[in-house]
Every structure is written in C-alpha cells, then in structure tokens.
Length: 578
Image 1: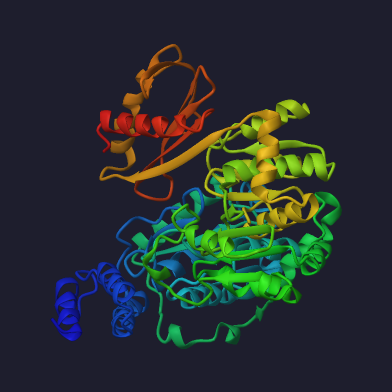
Image 2: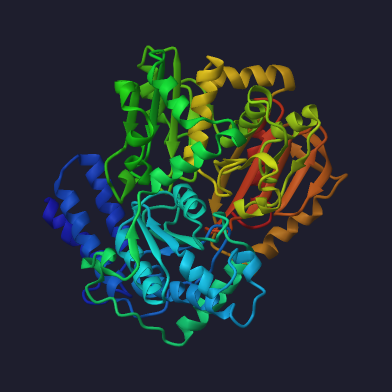
C-alpha cells in the first residue's frame, strides 16, 4: 500500500469533512506519528501537519461547549485541544478570572486568597502570560493576553516558558497572577490552563472553585469569542502588553535569595564551568525547557553540557512526555558513554515543573531526591527548618526529620497544599517529581531542583547515587514506586467502587507476596494509605487531573516493592476498577 493511499484511508477513518464535532483528529495524528517514528519517512510529517491544520481550524472556530465541563483541579484545567481547550473556552475562562477580580469590589472575601488589595490593584500590578510547547500554545496565550488587556490589566508576555519561571516573574514583578497555557506532562492531545495568584503558587481551592463556577455560568449562557485571525495576531499589539525575559527574572530571584536557601547561582555555574570532571545531560522532551538550558548552564562548559530532545515537536516523538524510567533511558545511555567521573542527568516535563535525575547508573525520583535535598540543605548548607512532603511520598524524609528533631508537614496530594508552611519548610516536594525550596517560589520548579542537584555534586564531589547511598547507610533504605491505570468510570461512580477498600482497617491483614501483613495505621486525607507493621505501605487514590486511579507503594526491602505493586493492582481488581 502506498503512503498516500494509507494516509487517505486513515483520514477517512477519523475525519468527517466539514464536521469537527464528529471528527477525531488525535487518534489520526498518533497513527501518523507512529508511522513517522517507525519508518523515518518525512512524508508522515507532512500528514501530521495536515491533520494539525484541522485541529487549528477547530481551535479557532469551535463555537460549542467543551465536551467536558470546565473544571480546575489540583493544578489547573486540562482537556483535549479543539474539543475542550479552544480559543472560545480559553477566552471564557479568562473572562471568568476578570469577573472574579471585579467582583471583589463588592465581596472582598477572596482578596486574601488572591493576594491583592482590590480590583484596581490587580489591574495595575498586572499579570504574566506564557505557554509551553503545545500545539497552538502561542495562539491561546494571545487569546488570554487580548482578554486581559481589554479588561485593563497590564500583561507581561513571556511567550514559551515554564511554570516555575513564570511564578518567579510574579514574585519579581509583584504581579497579581500568572497564566500558563499548559497541561503539564499530559499526552499530546491535551491543552491546559494554569492560574497562579500573587504568591506565585498554585491557586487555593477557594479561587479555583470560583473560576470553575464563573466559567461554567458564562459557557452556559452561550458565550461567544471572536477568534477571527487570532492565529495571525502578535499579542504585543494589544494595549499594555509588554514582552518579558522570564528566565532573567528567574535568575534574579534565585540570586537575590541565595542567603535564604544557600544556592548561589552565579558561583555554582562558575564552578561547573571550571570543573572538567563534571558532565550534565538534560532531556527536555521537546518541551519549553529546551529554550532555557543553554542559557541557564554555562557555555564555557562546552560539550560537558548535553541537551537531548531539544528541538520543537508538539507530538513529543510519540511518547508520554513525563519524567519516567522509560523516558530516562536516553540520558542514561549518553552519560554511560562519557568519561567524566561526576555525571548528572535529568529529564524535565514540557512545562518545566517536574524533574527526575540519574547519575548514569542510578535513577533517582523525587521520592528519594526530595529527602536528599532536605539532608543537603540541613547538613551541608546548615539551614534549619522542617520538611514538607505530600502523603504519597517516601518516608525517608520523615526519618531524616526525626533524626534532626524537626517537624514533618504531610498534606494531601497537590502542591497548593504546602501553603501553610511556605517560608518555614526548607524543602517541599511531591511524589510526581515536583520540588521547591525555602526562599524560592511556592510552585514546583524543575530548574531549582536541577540547581540543587548540580550544587550537590560540585560540593560533595560525589555522584548523586553515591550521596543517596551515604544517607541510606546512616538512616536506612526506602524503596518507593508508583503507577496509574486508566479507568472507564469516574466521579462518584469511581469513588463508590474505591469505598470498598474501607474494609481494610487498622488491625486487618493484607497478603503481600507470600506473607500476611498486618495494617497498623490508615491515613485517609487523600485516598487510602495503608501502613503495614514492617513500615512498608501502599496508597490508592483517584487522579485529580486524568481519568486514572493512581497507586503508590514503599517497601523497606528492594524485593518487596514489586510485591506491594502486585497487591495494589489486586485490590483495584477486587473492587471492580480494573
């Protein structure tokens, strides 16, 4: 079968001419991406582009309601590009945000959560707007800039950037808020909208619930946005829209607060440039960090700075663009071929709020690295304070805090849950590879994690795997893992099935491998975390952003982790989720 014939057959399968609602473009695009990756034939890229032209038309001209109701979850709103996230729906959400600020003129109860004094104060302080590498990201960011500008807000336009960097702009420029058009690590068919208030961190539930309500009301009232030629408009033509170098603002924030967190950006980069024994490899998975890495890391290091998947590709080469063991293989392979004794590798997700590490031999997820960062700031930088970690993370950090005589703050999943300890906790991190530190933004930021890891290597003269080993030798080893499964049911129906796990209470037993192990404690602040008598645990919770159920486990022995994963899957099958 010729390429052209196969292409037309696929178009016929997924596309109904002249009818976006009945067409399903992303399965078509994924088929073409698979053919491109398998064959290496440039023909398939032209067909991908052809399919994306249809998506673009849908994004610009969709006048329907989103297929799924607009909802801000633990980290913003996400949905399928064209069907859920399109010019009209993005404009609707943005106008809902304007309405929220305007309503504070009469009802002031949201002002403490927004961090502004008034509607006028919010407009004067303005906002920063950016986007990741997603298809039509610039177009959707232009929609946001247009709506906000016309409403009287000053707009700093960052273009393609990362979530953590935009949060730094909020703090440096004293903005009222930021908007980043990104669905974070979700697959290629997703678009998204992240809103952070004046503290630079993920918005409180009181804010996200208000935006959700106002946006739904607007959409129900047959909201229409004129998107004529929006894909051809330069956002800088709008009143009070100013282009900004967002990474420069991030650097300013880090350097200004070096006495607080102990990380001197300038000295760290000078030290790296002068150390021929250190090599750094960064995989951006085609995301926004690819634009920053060569500017952030010193050019004087030459070929000791290696950037992977650093070309634009809205399809991410057909992979799920998240920090994971599978996606880390490129970095590990590159580092294995290098002769430098000190190797540091990392993979960063598209909007730069998640990062995972390797030293070429040992992969280190945030479960381990968050605890290592706490140890490093406490022991090597002589900082003092508690540690904050979500309930689904490793208990290694708990062990360190116990040894240091410090407190642990352990909330439900979601970075916004750390708000009570911002400025108190030295490190705050979550199970899905997000981290920040004292003196930085209250938003997870891959770049601050990278800076920490690099300083760790330079200061200790050890690979991060060796540093981890030293900590485990003193405090004991922990072996965490996590996974997620897609489910057909959601909402109340899913929760009803998961409620069947309530039978596993403290004092009951779970079969782990060939052993019956007693549950000694159950934590229910977010899903169900069952802690066993040997200190191992497993936790099950529905995802707040995807149609998935997630499970997390941790064993005190290396071999026991797989048994816990098996048990978690068996429990999900037992309650009828699988």
